[in-house]
Structure formats: C-alpha cells, structure tokens
Image (cartoon, rainbow, N blue to C red; front, side, top):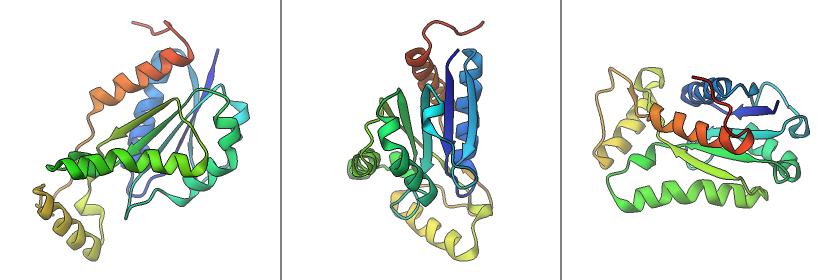
Length: 183
C-alpha cells in the first residue's frame, strides 16, 4: 500500500484545514498518509511513495519552512509523484491580470527550487478578518476593497471550493494508487 506525505505550511490555519481535507480523501482511497506541518517536523521524502505540499501565499511568498523543506528534498521529490497546492486569494480576482498572477506564482516558486511537481493546484483560501491584528485587518480590507471583495471585518470568509479540492485529491490518489476508492 502506498504511503503519502501531506506537508503543509499555514499562517492563520486555512491551509491546515485544506491539508486535512486532502488527507481525508486519501484515506477514502485506502492510502496511508502522514500529515505534517513544515515548521514542526522534517520528514524525509524518501520514506514516502508520493508527496503533496500545501502552502499559502502571504505578501507574495510562501511560508519559509515549506520553501526550506522543498529545497532540501527537491531531488527526492522529482523521483516520485508529487503535487503542490497553492492557497491564494488572488485566484478570486475580478480582473484577469490578478488571476494570471495567481497562476504564475506557484510555477515560479517550484521552478526556483528545482522541483517539478506532477500536479499543481491553486486553491482559494480564506479571508479571516477576526484572526488578524488591527493592522493586518486594515490592510487586508484595503486590498480586498480594491479587488471588489468582501469587506465586513466582523466576520470571516471561507472561499475554498471544497468539492473541487476533493476532486483534485481524488485525481492525485488515482495517480498514486489507481482504482482503490471505497464506496
């Protein structure tokens, strides 16, 4: 039975939720998986048949522990099925330029690190106003206002398309371990 590492970096917790959802789909396929937060552990990619890495974009970059882990394990990652899940609010942009940039960021990221993932998935994250400090809340509201998004800072907004995320995880599971999903 294959074993998959689901490694993630998270800032406010949305990417952790996304990683847990991916792991649940893998379990539906009877695939053993380990869920690891990049800044809490340093798993060896060679111990896994496949790897999924999830990270969120903040201020134009991904979490440093994720970047360091990928750089350290790029050679091993390129020898097995892998996926990169980029969590980004810009994918929701009302203008094409914003959506195009959201698509280009993960490709540039993995290219710089020498990693060629089997799959790249861009996922809308969340706008978690209630978890931000005053300055971040103010800044996020300004950014979102310019994009025409939700500005009520008294609540949070979860934009993740969970059905689409599950479909992605199903496709990846099929790459690693074809036709094993249970009813």
